[in-house]
Image (cartoon, rainbow, N blue to C red; front, top):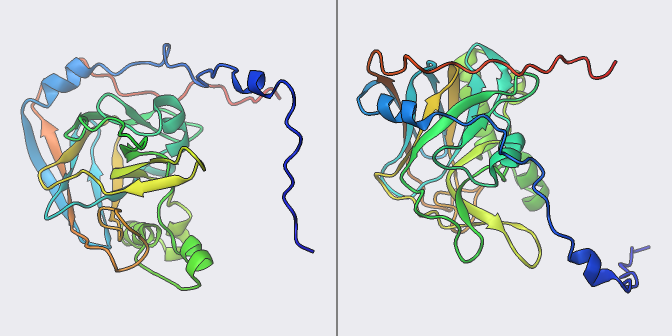
Length: 287
């Protein structure tokens, strides 16, 4: 028997209920703010120390020592990337996309921080420069660098298309993490988590509330820069969707490489910087 959707009777006070004013879930007035002046002074003279090219429809890793900067560069053509971040010394502490979204919003830019998972829950990185910060929110409600989407993956692809595709971001991240750590693919996959969608332009449709993507405004020469608050392992996938203007999880889109680099600030420029401590909640949970 097919389920029939039935609209319930609209209550007489429906408009009054809809008119209730929204309240911000996590007011940020008491959120510790980064001292952008310290970062600004430190980034005036940066020396590259490491770099890696992320090939199209592949992923690569790079280690970023705390107190260093990293940049993700667009090269060759418009391309989005899916970024996982880990504590380089403890894979169980990883980027927490959902909490970053709750604290900063659906998209992040200069001055926002990327937070780690429980129980550490501390800033892993601070965004210190974003060449796309001019984009703002467009007429469709779209913006850049989202913490909404999870990553394209072969399980959803199989569910929707009935086919296996092995170069979606989830698989790319799994292979790269396994190669870096020596873990098996099965072990590495368990550490892959929801991403920062670098350069991706996304939002929610106003009529159906569905997650949408559109052509990224990124162009070669654009980059996003972050300051490593702790030792980081970054794993970046060059999404098979290219600029995500049409589709992903296939070889149909034009794709380009991305580049990641690590930069060291001059000695003495971070004398006033204090690395973040782990969250001080006592973890008793009321027991």
